[in-house]
Length: 78
Image 1 (cartoon, rainbow, N blue to C red):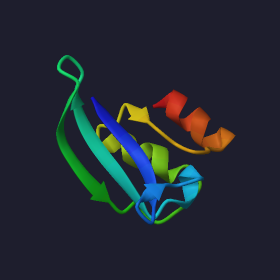
Image 2: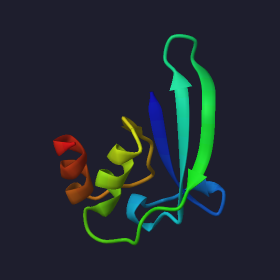
Image 3: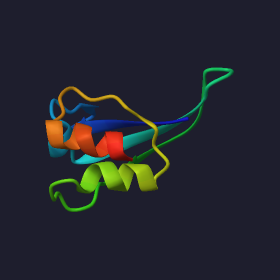
């Protein structure tokens, strides 16, 4: 399982779309151990770009402080 966490200055970003980095954490769901972690800069911010990009990274779970309705709808489509 891959989890994405929007990050701003080493902390959870208060808003998904404003994150300067995404921490991508790969977790073994059985043993609940972290297999791999990396920080990736997102593509240029355009409406709807982040959900598609995260899906391309293999992300299935997002932990966010706040997220807009459009992003939520795009995640549901992915």
